[in-house]
Amino acid sequence: MLKDPRELLRAMFDAAVNAASPSLRIPGHLPATPRGKTVVIGAGKAAASMAKAVEDNWRGEISGLVVTRYGHAIPCNKIEVVEAAHPVPDEAGYKAAQRMIDLVRPLGSDDLVLALISGGGSSLLTLPAAGLTLADKQAVNAALLRSGAAIGEMNIVRKHLSAIKGGRLAAAVHPAKLITLVISDVPGDDPSLIASGPTVPDRSTFADARAIFHKYNITEPRAALEHLDRAAEETPKPGDPRLAAAETITIAAPQLSLDAAADVARKAGLTPIILGDALEGESREVGRVMAGIARQVALRGQPMPAPLVLLSGGETTVTMRGNGRGGRNVEFLLSLAIELDGLPNVFALAGDTDGVDGAEEIAGAIATPDTLRRAEQKGINAKASLANNDGHGFFEALGDQVITGPTLTNVNDFRAIIITKTK
Image 1: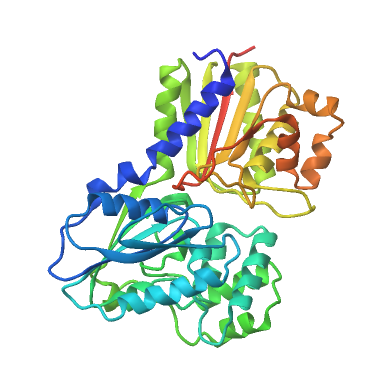
Image 2: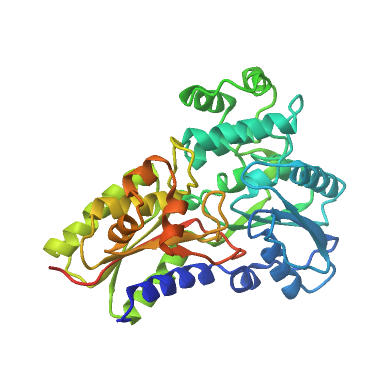
């Protein structure tokens, strides 16, 4: 085993990220060149790196447009890369979405559209439905982010306020052939939820979207509520002839990355236990549950004695109660540390595989048995930091942040808890 649990935690995280690299995953999934044109479109935090991997491995002419998060672009020669805002959309994403629709509409049945979709695309690819404005979409996104709504709920709302999500982009591509390559960042890898499913059929309805507004007591903007009430044009459903020939291939997903981390753990002499790749819930509550599992291993050797590592993925949520610098992963980790209360032999890392946790350009952080003691020495109250949703501020003060910069992929959150020995 590596002597330093911190080193091992970071090695597992890096392996998880690298396993989802587009340069590794794209080449084996490219289709044959068509008789007509090949046009690449895409949206997400991995869109630029996916486009570059397509360019590097494509035989034949190619062109297109993808949109990614600010700071996540990489140079491409034939495919234009546009940067836009995430998680609240901006004008750049709006213009890119409109251009994308204009790019695919004239194509014919001999042409191929290769769609590159990854997490974050829902905010980056924003085209308000008729009667709505970009400001309306921005207000709804901000309200959903504050509410603690699950990612699936957010995407149902976004689909029904959009002219491009929920299969509407695929409908615009018809009659050209459409193949979508997906990097999944959602629990269960459902392509209709990734980036709000712009190229796949949508089973959700306007009624579902209205129910989510009511559930979280979202009452503004009025234009969005009125649009949902009108329910004028549903999203394309399974069986829609415009989407009948469309093909979707998931090329990377959280489970693949957890398996890569597990391999690193085995080589270091730890038994990996993968608890799931689709864990959801309030970040602080998931932290409490994980602490209970870790305590059972550390004190009782159940379900098996240490050394071992508990691995999990998925996307938790944060309901903002304070005004600190929060993020799903640091909120989880701070809650975990508080519940463990200095328990020896337990070390943990939580990070977002795209390198951005919440609105911070920080992937996540590491917690150790002395985390609370070191914080107290600096005059920092961990429980107060958690109450203020200030996980980033807490771990920054301790020098325990995990900083990667943009990883140019995104298979959601990664959590690893090492228990070095059982008491």
